Length: 421
Figure (cartoon, rainbow, N blue to C red):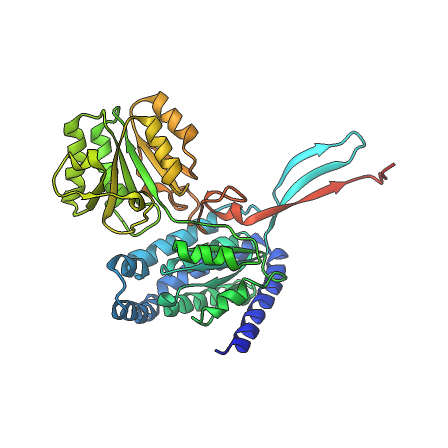
């Protein structure tokens, strides 16, 4: 597309989304629930078509030399499709936040004042690689009665178009506007810049992906943005750790799925932990073929550990590489996390209640884990069904974002004819 057709296309998408958002706002929870359940059925009955379109993306990804971790994120396997179906059903079963009243008060003059939950309106979501985000994001937006415009990465173009087509069918079957879920139908980057200028038709932008993508969106958007910066997640193994818990947690946090944002990227080891236990952590990771970058203390525990530099403490590797540092107790661990972390997810392994209480209170992250893997920082694991993203902001939402996080509120004031004197 040339520049002018792109501008016309995006403008039409956003205007259609605005109209759809108004229809959704006047619709019922029963219809949105029906649309989500219908989409779950369509995913099940159209597996062959989904895999065929996904296959086009996978062939291009391998031809373009994407890493195996990135190919894994891109793949729509039976397991991934089953997970999407499960997420849709769980979101469908959630109570709608729309219309909920809170902060009731009655003023001395008799005015009854409260707030009610309302949809944000039109949400634009810009993301990379993982096509399951298309379904997760659309589901949460729909459940909260928001229209959504999705712009996935070029590497998942065919997968995303196929999923959006199924969602349009599900919406129509439920008597809802098919334009409530739309995909930007081009991989031209110009489309993103145009979308980010549609201040009168789009209410919120949510980017999901690498740090470069998010920085670009923040710099160019004229629309409010909820950010999900990189996931530099830490696990601190205290001198008070139960090693029967610490070893599997550390391995799981790094190895179970290294290419995702809640995977551990830095391991902090208390120098007062018995030396044999420190070495056991190193050995467990190396058995899983994790490449380690350590400070002088860690490199003294075993041979063949690469020297860590300043950049390693800030790195989001998204593969089987890991920074490891020795720290002198919890205070140094907390200082390191708050200095180098990304406010995503950080964990402590300790049997000391005082220590875990201090960690929870002082670590400035959207999720803090106590004796559990960072991999649990996820909307599905938090009972949300699926998530729109994991916000590392402090306003307006933080951590895994579910249905309630895509609402705002309005004040409602009910009187009996009062006038202000």
